[in-house]
Amino acid sequence: MSFSSSPSTHPVLACASALGAALDEVATVDPLFMTTPDKESALLDLTAIAARLDELRLRVLNCADDVAATHGARDAGAWLAHQARLDHQAGRRDLTAARSLTRHPRVADALRAGTIDRARAHVVMSAVDALPTHVDPDTRTRAEAHLLEQARAFDPTHLRVLGRRVLAVVAPEVDDAHEARLLAAEEARAQAVTSLTTRRRGDGTTDIRIRCADTTADRLLTYLQSLTSPRQGNQGDQSSDDPRPYPQRLGHAFATFLETVDPTRLPLHGGDATTVIVTLDLATLLSQLGEPGVALIGDQPITAAHARRLACTAHLVPAVLDGDSHILDLGRSQRLYNRHQRKAMALRDTTCRASGCTIPAAWCEAHHLTPWSRGGPTDLDDGILLCPHHHHLAHDHRYDMQRHPDGTFTFHRRV
Image (cartoon, rainbow, N blue to C red; front, side, top):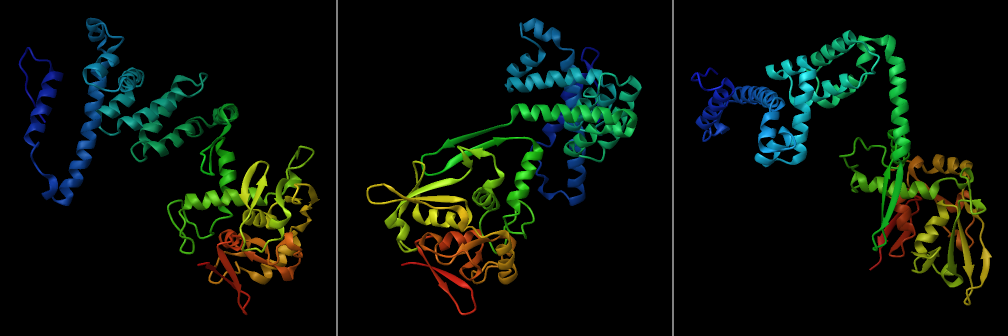
């Protein structure tokens, strides 16, 4: 686009006027009827023009201290935010970007040419500024040039990864020591900000918020994903065998993980390995599997069905009380199937024993057909493998569990 200006009009103002006039000309034009190639060209051209216009605006902002002084503003960014009704943080970011571009003229040139946008320009400048102070100017120049070249092919996210390892390309001799310092700093920061908070919602659920190192999060997800469907491809998919959304499956897997973790490998807690003691009365313990009831973990009530299910997989100790709340017996956690029995079940069952369920044995839990609380033996004849979903149903008093001649089981909701 060419434009002319009178001797008294600054070229930047003439440019703004010409751009405004050009936009007025297409203000009512509907791009719906553009050809596909024209739309492609328009999108790419307008994106490049927006980057070039952004650079010009930042160039003017960088030298607008006199504007701030005239109006008594803290700085030009604050004045612009107020006058243009921008968020004050946006004005501050704009001024910071404008100052940064003066220290990185090559980045400013690329932005001015429209070959990169502001987001990629920010990544390049941040990566170069983050280089160690002992890196010489020539290495910094080569690092910036390399990242500007890569910015033509990569988006800001991938470019940020390349920026972190830019020394490995332009100065491999100093990269190892620099990387070690970066990792040490990251680990120290992760340690400092690691936290876990809980908030009871009052509806029987609790919000858990964890902030931890990436490696810790990856390790937890690895454990939880091992308990979800092996056909799960990514977090947006749903298994054809499991209609639950993936976040819900992860939440259920977290509960299963806590129930099945081996307490003998944990530090002693209160004089014993971390073992859950559930208090229930004798009548509840001896009731039929399908009947409801209430038990306590500490002072927190749970259903008796939930307590019975925990008895299959968790190191749960029932404290049985008589009618006067006297302790009759403290059960032992020896009811759990050992790893050799689990292997034998896996060879026998191969998948969840619920009819039509294909969840493999490795993802299943051992279940006592005769409840352990009612004298059920911990042997192979009385044990079957059920996936977590069907294991919950087996201990849900609202469902009947029926065994078939082929060794499979079906569940039916009671009327």
